[in-house]
Image (cartoon, rainbow, N blue to C red; front, side, top):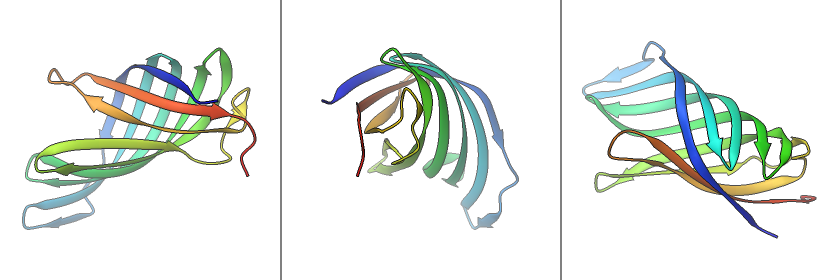
Amino acid sequence: MTQHAAGTFELDVFEAGKPYHEHLDTTIARVHVEKTFSGGLAGTSTAELITVATGDTPRAYVAIERFEGTLGGRTGGFVLQHNAGGDNGRPWLSWKIAEGTGTGDLAGITGEGQIVIGPDGGHSYTLDYSIGQYT
């Protein structure tokens, strides 16, 4: 049975590393992020991002994020795989739970969702998930 979680998160740490590719107006860099989640997901995470920007404008990123905390009354953790980009100037940000990464009461978790950045810069999320045996 699929369940739904939603809420917000705060960026506690955003450490941009030195760009490792710069050509004309395009920059590729690594970023370390630490977050605190509230709502359906309650806990903390760390993530490593590879970002692409043109000028001062973010264009895309991929990331791996490790979450630890509670979800639906269960305690444990899992890994999220991020993919983000833009379409005609409108950003899209999606994530998927990496199969087999659930621990504790979250063992066997699968799912996917989205991140939304509001006009004020605040971050919210949705996550549709199931907990059971993956094959």
